[in-house]
Image 1 (cartoon, rainbow, N blue to C red):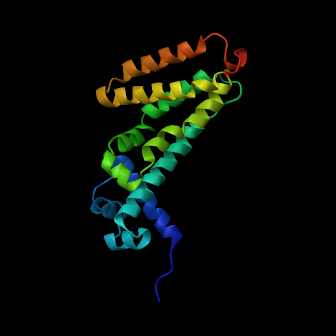
Image 2 (cartoon, rainbow, N blue to C red):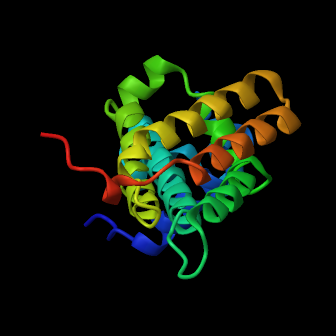
Length: 193
């Protein structure tokens, strides 16, 4: 008779693997995850089925953590202008809280992403549109969610390539100032036909 699944052990192993991947990147081999969990490759395979299933689960756990953290940062706060919310979110995303996610996801090789999570790139982009639309709706500009997301993603790529935090921070704040000074809002404009 085989052993019964033990979800609490699997969950602890997955957390340890996600912690390791966020600190060091998603590994190509199981050995770094074996070391990080203090278990054996056999035990990891027992709990996750295959190496790819484990890596897919690690990606999913790290992504869920990122969504939880940054989704909360993008949440509308009563009485706070949404540009202030966006500024705080930018500071966290580019600071020590966000760097592990940016590093891990930006270092993923496209072929690995296609193999492990074929829809990752699209999902990792579009799942931010809803929270941004909700926030931008408070200033009458929900239609600008794609633009705001494109600016954030572009500046994150710039920051990753150059490491120039001061310049990218200044550019984001200049962008926020532009948002604050846009005339009217979606509420003041007729809906497009």
